[in-house]
Length: 283
Image 1 (cartoon, rainbow, N blue to C red):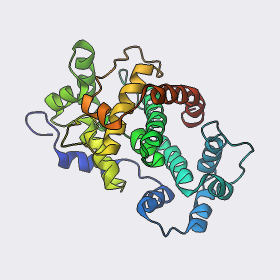
Image 2 (image 1 turned 45 degrees about the horizontal axis):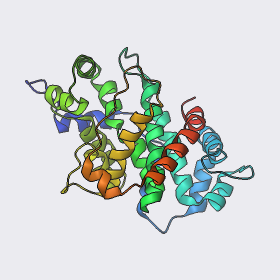
Image 3 (image 1 turned 135 degrees about the vertical axis):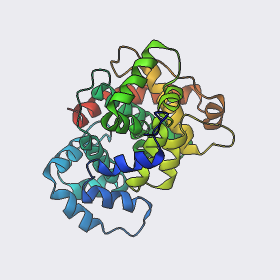
């Protein structure tokens, strides 16, 4: 941290490297996101060695989220029925949520954070289906859209608490306050973490830019994250006391072209699946 109280990108990079590492199987799953030649049998074996991860992944595979008519009992079966990309998403999701332990901050509610992240991820997946973007990629990227907040509250708790307290007392957006007080915002920090974890560059960019949509900054995945974030705030699913709804960027909304009928379906499916998935992932 420099003399102005601002946090440098280099300091963030150092803090990120000090966070608990993801398991080797999750790192391998992330690396395989952009590959077509994946040794699925080897990955299945590695996942199966982690009993906690396997149990949660199978609970998610058997949830209404995937709408299976019968019980899936193994990771191999899940891949056969749901496809490798879906299993890759649910295993990665389970591991990432487990990788951040709660601290004792009085102002930052970890449960509310993950409820919003999960709601946004479900919503993003539904939007992605409508606009014909990879729904698994949209789910994972949106799950992480605010992950920079967790990095900041766990590594710079005192300074980030100051940001959150000022936000409660003012009408300024969180990103503006973060940049004013810390010199960096949670989107940039989240993108740095996604880079360290070796997420695809497309996801890194979407996380970094989901609050700064423009005609020049218009990657479809970033548009989906931006709109899904706003929609799930509006649906008020998190049980937060001070829920505020960010304004949706007109350009993002127009580019996605969501019809009224599509919106009704997206809202309904997000609300229908939300509580069950939260019960599995953040119980």
